Length: 219
Image (cartoon, rainbow, N blue to C red; front, side):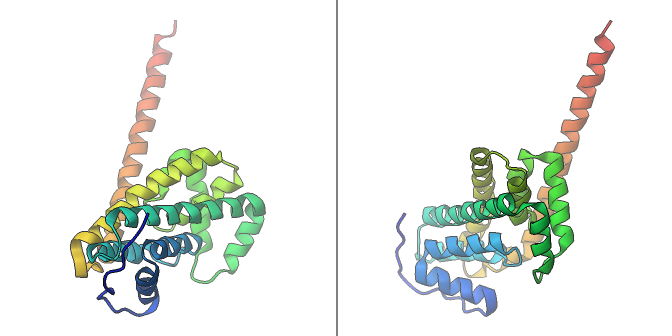
């Protein structure tokens, strides 16, 4: 995909947002993809900033909307694949030892992610892409357990495309108010988590009901 550099972004910023702004301005969609790949590898980096910013850049003509979605989703998949292989090559004990030494992260986040993957398996890969922190870390237990790579990549791509599309389009439509997305993304993530929990509960209840009905029909 190609992108066209027409004008500089009109949103000066400091810190990570400023770095991401410059990256998107200099490299277009490839810069946004690089930032998202790094966000997967270092969860404290907020995709809630990069994705709306990329949508805003698309609205200003720095790249097409299709290129924005392509590059950010590619970045998500590349970052997730890197974490998958880190988990696969290092194993659980080494991953936990390294994680415990990293700044700005909590050991409990990795524990919770592993528990979620153990309970939900493939569904956790798809749905986890829409939940902060889990979005990055869910790749680690998938690698540790050597989940099939084709399935992992397909679920990662689909889940990332949905989440990235929501935030990129929000930034595209909001224009120079793209920063508002970051304020509401926590609410969106909580809604997703609640819907996931309700869907899983309904599935388990339905399955339990079918099992009870089958037992009653036995002679």
